Structure formats: C-alpha cells, structure tokens
Amino acid sequence: MCGIAGFVSLPNAPKFDARMVERFADVLAHRGPDGQGSYSNGACTFVHTRLAIIDIEGGHQPFVARRENGAEVALMANGEIYNNLELRQAMTDTAFTSLSDSEPPLYLYLKHGVDFVHKLRGMYAIAIWDGELERLILSRDPFGIKPLYYAQTEHGFAFASELRALVSKDLCAPKLNRHIRDELLQLQFSTGVDTAIEGIHRVAPGETLVIEKGVIVSRHQRAALPTGGPVSLSLEGALSRLDDVLNDTVGMHQRSDVPYGMFLSGGIDSSVLLAMMSRLNAEPVTAFTAGFSGTDVPDEREHARALARGVSARHIEVEFGEADFWAELPKIAFHMDDPAADYALLPTWKLAQTARNEGIKVVLTGEGGDELFGGYGRYRAARRWLFPKAMYRKGIMDDFGVLLDNDRARTWRAGIAQAGIAARTSGRTALQVAQAQDIATWLPGDLLTKMDRMLMAHGVEGRVPFLDPEMAAFAFALPDKLKIRHKLGKAVLRHWLARAMPAAHPYAKKRGFTVPVGEWIAFRGQRIGHMVGAQECIQAICAPDAIHNIFAMPVGRAGKAAWTLLFYALWHKIHIQGVAPDGDVFDVLSA
Image 1 (cartoon, one colour):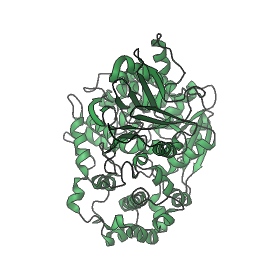
Image 2: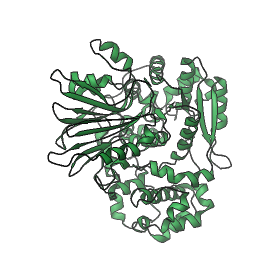
Image 3: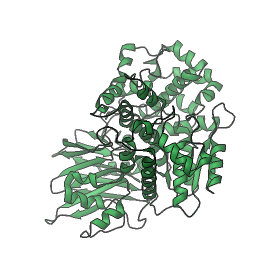
Image 4: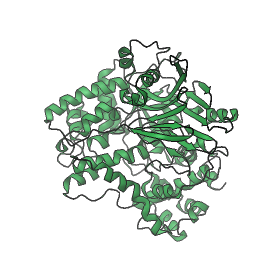
C-alpha cells in the first residue's frame, strides 16, 4: 500500500516544478512512511511513497523496463496484487528485478497493453508512463478499493492517490462543487466521478484511462460483477463452494511479509473472516474490536471477546468515547478530503491507530459482505415487492425544513437514480439490481473511501476479502433464496458460520453498527449548534431556526442530520477555507 502522484506537462508548457514533487511526497507521506521514489522522463514525473508490505528490501518503486528499441516504460502502484505468485509462475520468460507484487503488472502491460488489468486479482491504483507512445495510463480496481484522482490543468495532467494532493495554487483551487455538497448532505457520500472540489475527478472503479498530451483519449472498463441473473445452486452445493472460495480468497489476502490482523465487529462478515483466518493460521489471530461505554448503543466487545476466546485469538479492545469524538474529529475530517460523513469513521480511525501501535501493518476487514450476500434490510424489501420502491428515496435533511433551496436540494438523487438504471441489466433480479446499485455508489463512495483514509492515515493497509473477483463472481450469482431466507439476509454465510463457529449465533437478527454521535452532540447541543450555524458554509444553505431545532434534540434522524452538518462544517473549514486541523472541534470551528 502506497501513495502515488504524478504530472505530465503539456507541449510548450513549463516542466513540472521540483517544488511540486516535494509537495506530492509530503502530502502523501502518511500513505508511505517506509520510503520515497521518483521518476522523470520527458514530460512525465512520477512520485511514490511506500508502505512496505511485500519484498520489504527490494520492492522500491517506480519500476522501469525497456522495450527492444530502448524506450522506457515506468509503473508505480498503490495496492496489492494477490495473485502475484501465480503471475510470476506463468511469466517464466520475464527477468524480474524484485519480488514485489507490483512488478508483474509492468510486464503484463508490455505484453497485453491496456488489457493487462484483466490478469490482476487484487486492489490497485496503477499509473504507467509509456515513453515510446508518450502516453499515461491510469487504472483502478473494479470495486474502487484503492482511490485515484486526476485534474486537467492549463499546464498538464495531474493525478494522485488523494484529492488534497491536487489542491494548490499551481493545480486546482479549493472551489466547492455544490452538487457534490448537496449529495453529501442528503446521502452522507457522493456518487460518480466528480468530487467536492471543482476540477478534480475520480478515476471510476474498474476504469482504465489513456491520456495523451493532457487529454483523455480513451476509457476502458473492467466490470466488478458478472453479467446475467442468478445461477441454479443447492444450499449444500453453495456451502461447499463458499468454503473453497473463502479458503482461497482469505489465504491470498493473508500474503504479507509483515504482521497482519483483522477488525472484529462480532457481526456475520467479520466472524466469518475470524473463523477462516483461525483455520488457516497456526499462530493466534490478532483481532481488534471497538466499543462505546456508557451509551445507549449496543457495545459489540463482549460478543467479540467470546468469539476471539473460542478460537484463542489475541483480542485487543478499543474504547472510543465522547472525549475522542471532540478531540479527533478535526484530524478525521482533514484526512477525509473526499468527504463521506459516515460516523463509522470514528472507531475506524482509532482501530487503525491502535493496530499500528501494536505493530500491525495489514488488517483484513469485512467490507463488501453485506453488498454481495444481501445483508441490508432494503434488499429484503427489493425481493419482497413485485415493483420495489426506489432506494434512498428520502434524504438526511428532508422533513426538517433546514435547506433554503428546496428545488436545488431535489437534484441530489440524480447519481443514485442513474446507477439504479445502469444496474438493470438483462436477467438480473430486483435483489441483484439493488445490490449492483449499492456496489456502484455506496460501496466506493462511502465504505471504501472511509476505510482507505482512516487506515492509511496511520500507515495501515486494509484488505477486503469479500471484494475479491472470485468471491464476487460466486456471491453475486447466488440464487436470491440463498441470500435472503426467513427474513434474514446473508443466508448462505449464516449457514456456513453455523457450522464453522456456532458461538457466533449466526441466525440472530442483524443489529447494525451504530456510533452514539447523537448522544455526544446532545451533551453540548446548544454550544455546538450555535457554532455550526455561524459558519458561512452553513448559513449559505440552511435556515437558522431549523439548525437550532436539529441541534436542540439530536436523536434519531435529527441526530444523523446534526452529525452530517457538523462534519460538513469542519470539512469545509479545513479543505475550502484552509484552516489547519489543530486542536479540537471547537478550536477549528472558531478559527
């Protein structure tokens, strides 16, 4: 896992300034605290910061190869290629210079061109400079696990692992994209390729861009999900296949030259990972669980503790409290440069911090399990009705009378609606359409962005076995009845877990994961409500009386609205107004 950035100058434009190389390296240093590398060839400049996971001594990037005519081709990557060993075994005629998992893609490109990505099994954001053709190639994994951003400027084409690396007077000014702001306030995340900063865009999940002379000349897409509808499969056949896929996928995701562990919530997905990791490892698994003492929300630590004890795992419990909330939120908002106001940011931040302090550089997490195996309540509704209602029909701010421009506010569903239309391919059931819509929007826009930023802020790599291509091909094509059964989602995972780890109580009703942000805000509701309402970015879009009412009683949906407004106010203060994230929430909002 690493940070990558680069720039390709336009013809007759000034060459990339060495000071910007230093700035890229500084901004992305937390993603790669183990070393830095750079490459320059003609109009192209690459910058790489390294988190050493595979081939610690020899895996320095960028990698450079030469064509027969002597022209150089350079590659740098952020991510992990899990089938690295298998690729090397198949490429017997290649003289590799390292054992790094990021080197085989370079030679795959030389052989297959932009189709090289179809050989990869992993999570990745890859940049290639082809010196002979003078073209830049940017590629992102099919689910969008690893981030990649770009900007087309008057001087050239810039890209980076994080949005804020591209915000500067020489590249992109911090100008707010109002449509993305509207999505954020209503969804807590944003959809599509545009970002909250005008002029900065995401490489879409599964997309490969070809750039020549500062212009995108072609786009190529690698699908995350199989085509067609469900396949016919019995429960026993599905359980047997699931066991094989889990064994293979989790085994690959454990490939590492440094210590690894997992995040254990006690839910179905992380319990499945714990059960399989315990089977595959001779040494005890290291598992981290977050909890919240003295609040009304469920605390998962007791259940997780029992599961860990049952497999002799090393279990580390992490407390996230009200004091953490006020102290850490500005730093969290700073690292969430591509904003997603998911309150799970909070415990994920501290889990990653604790993991790094414990010497763990790699963790496996359960993201993707709900989306692929049918875990959400909205999926049960999609299967139950002949004409299911559209998902995300109501926004977070609806019914509170808080937004001044209601007509503009209604446009926030455009990206969600477009993704829903695109998900309706031939043969898919209503359940699969709902899953595909989430996998195209909520998963990369919220869950994976949250995981990447919170973990990489502490130099920890997050791996998601449920989003492996083999796992996705199996899970998405399961019959609906093996996803939802007796009003419970993730049916086949529950059946597998009942055999592998009965103590997990896999048939218990899903409780969901909640962070008591409403309770914490309520303790200081009047003060924080006044401070949020006083921000220019809030006054421009919100009715003052409605702000007061939301923060006066921040429970239920009002609590979610208060949290979202607080997060947006902090994000805007830091990323648009340029206020440093020093001090606590009150310090930053009063700056």
